[in-house]
Every structure is written in structure tokens, then in C-alpha cells.
Amino acid sequence: MNGIKFLSIFVLVVLLLSTGITAAMGQEPPPENSANEGHLLLQPGDVAAFEDERSQDQEAVVVQRTVEEYFDAKLQIRLGKATAATLERFFDQANSDGREALRREAMKAQGFFERTEQVGPPVQDGSVGVKIEFERLMVSPLTFAVREIQSYAILHPTLGKCTTEEVFDHILHLVLIGDLWLIVRDDYFDPGGDAMLARGNFTALTTTEVPDDLGMSPDRRAEVGVLPATVYVYNRTAAYNYAENHWNDYNDWYEDFCGSGGDCANFASQVVLAGEYPKQWSGSYQWWYNHNGTQDPGNDTWSTSWINVWYQKLALDYHYGYFTGSANNLKVGDLVYMDWTGDGTWDHVAIVVVADPSGGNPLLDAHCNDRHQMSLSWFGAASNYYFRVYDSV
Image (cartoon, rainbow, N blue to C red; front, side):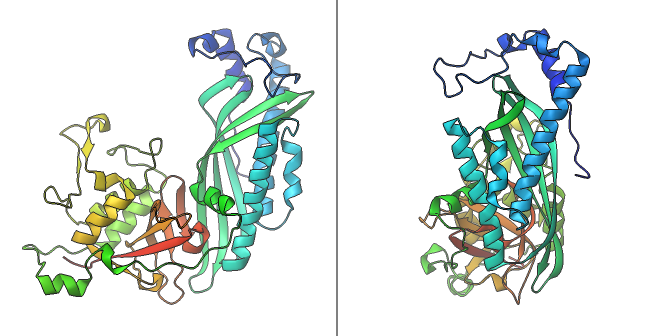
């Protein structure tokens, strides 16, 4: 597949093993009577199998080809060009973890195609790029990080032909059985897909209008005289540029919360700030991020509303906008809040980068997973809440 770049896996494995990195990392041996018992696993002491450079190259090619074909197979199912059975050959089905991973991935890949068929916009074509990284490494089972970048050409009913992207960071776990490397686990963060999987269907449910008690309407604000002393104009172009520049290239001026609950609200706050609306340092609805005079995010502090979806919507609704009942009303730089399962807990927020006033299906950027110009309907949340940022305050 064109455009796919790989790092050599086993050359690094040899180097790490030869320097005793397994012991340095404090890695414990596999538990006795594990689900993998009886498989021909690569043990930390089995360096001899990789002493020959030609053998190293051959094994690296096998693993690289396996990973490449696995991600391509998932893509083909998403495009409706293959069935879920295509994935069976990649998993260790003698292992309970492998069987569960196969079931999950097959259903999610098939569900993506079904959701696209039902709610659109239709996919014209797609491609996947895979980059193997070594953020974490174990030898038994072989464990490494993989970044998957999926690109789709879609035919949006009102916006025309568009290109969207999704980025997933995986930790893949493979075991060697005979001469085959098979997957026992594929760990990655996909709250939207997992929520739809848990619901047992992949149909985008009807959207839910926000109750009136979630914040003051524009008319109510005027009635009570909430008028700031200084007029600020929301720079939607600047908000758009920031979202497009940092949807997957994180601004290192800010702390990254992907590993501690999610970075979506942090990203949305940065976008609104880039749109030239000021931080709110005092009062009941504070909304701020403080760099504390240094360039090291480790020294930063922030308000809960800056990084938490629920508290963010309270603060932004009070200061900078209001909720509307239709996605048709959204402009570039506005926000969409999402409840994955419909249980009343708001789980996610994304930024509108391409509005769709006639079709109500705008394109969104978001963090964790990093998503670029992804159609609202593709997120598949049980409930969506549409936030209009004021043009000026």
C-alpha cells in the first residue's frame, strides 16, 4: 500500500535485548498458566533467533507486512469492499483475549460502514497510513505502539467532495505461533466507536435539544442586562486556523491531557481563546489557563472549566454563547458537545470547521482521538448539543 512508512522493529528489539533493557524496565515474566501457555512465544532470553542479520530482516518484514495488512483489512471493511471475516486470520483465536479483540474490531469496522450507509455522507474512497513507534516495548508478547491515520474522500450532500481524517494511537500485542505473528490485543482510545459497540447498534440516534435550564438564552441575557463594559469580536477565522493547525499537532505551550481523561475540552478552550475571547479569572464561572511565567507546561495551572466538558459548557454558556436546537445554526468556530450513550453525561466536545447551514451536518475537528473535518453524523453520539459562540460580547 502506497505511502505507508515503517520503522524496523526487530533491529531495535535486538539492541534493547542485548543491553538488558527488559530488566531495566522492571518487566515481569508472563504468569504461569496464562492464556498464552503452549504457544511458541519469543522469550526475553531468546536472542539467538535474532543474531543473524538476515534472519532479523526476514522477521521484520513478516511483522511489518502483518501489521500493514491488518489495518488495510479494517479499512476495506469500513469501505464496504470486504466482509468482517477478513480479519479472522490476523488474531490468535485460541486465546480468549484474541477472540474478544477480533469480535470488537470486526463489529466496529462493519458498524462504520453501516453507519455511513444509513446517515452519510457516502465514502468515495479511502487510504490508511501506519507508523510503528516505540513508546513502549515488551518482548513476550511483542508489544509496540502504532499510529494509524485514516483518510476518506466523502461526497457531502451539501458541501460537495471533502476529505476527512482520523488518527488512532494503538498498542498492539502479538504472539508468535509457528511462523505466524498473531494479534492478541489491540488497545486504543475510541470512545465513540466503543459507545456504539456497547449500545449494540451503530445507527446515529436522533439529536436531543438542550433543556432551557442549561443556561440563559440571548433574550434572557438582554433582559437582565448582562452587558460587558468592553466589546470583544469573535474572530472565527483565527479560531478556524488554530483548529486546523493543531488538530493533530498539539501546541506544546499547553498541557496535553490525552493520557488523563481526554484533551477535547482543553483543545476547544484553546480554539475559543484563539478566537480572541478573553479568559475569565474571577466569579462563579471562571475559565482560564495560567502558564505561570514559564514555557514548561508542567508548571501550568488551569480552571476545571478549561479542561472539563461539563464545567466548560457552563462557563462558556455564561460568558460567550448559547445553546441552539439545530446544527443548521452553527458557524465556523462554534462547538458541538456530545453524550456518547445518552445517559446524561456529556463526554466530548468538537469544533466546527466547516458549517453546513442547509444540511445540518457540519465538519468537526477534535482531540483524543484526533479528528480532522469529520462529519457530525460520523461521531455517532446518542445526543448532540449545539453551542453557538456569540459574534461579539
